[in-house]
Amino acid sequence: MAWDWWSTKGWRIDMRGPKLQLVAGVAALLLLLVAGGLGYRAWQQVRRLEQLNRVAADLEAQIRRERERNDRLQREWERVSSPEFPEEWARVYGGMTLPGEVRLVVPESAPPTPTPTPVPPTPAPFWKQWWGTLTQWAR
Image (tube, rainbow, N blue to C red; front, side, top):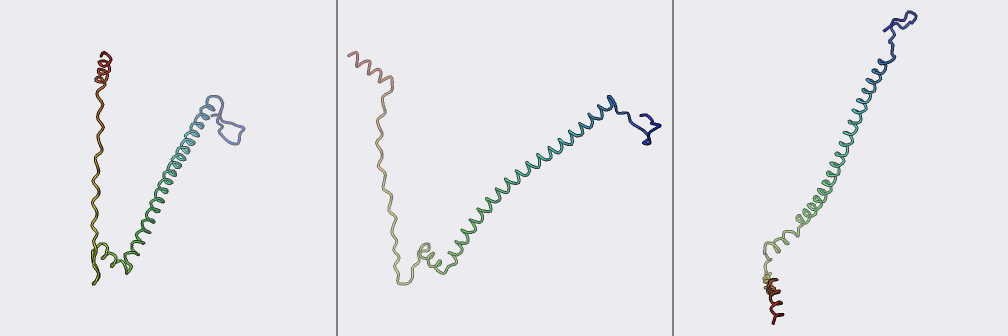
């Protein structure tokens, strides 16, 4: 540092040569660190956004499935809470009849017995076929 007698600013730093290169190198390094940090944070944010989009898609699919299930349950509830359901259940599943009715039970027919498929004869081993061919030729 040199003192400028004619300057009104006081001390003046001489920035020539190696000092200038050192300051420029440190500034470039700091700039790279800041840019790298910002780039890394941006990359993390992009990954997090992709993850959130996947979770949102999964949740939307789950919501759709639950709404379909809710609709099925609502239809089942309407069917069960109807006045005709107890009579239908009693007749179909309970085996009950009204007075004066006759219950007719049709037995299930037994499935027909399958006929066994004939097993094709197994061919003779390869060596026997060759032996038969050779001995037949020699006769």
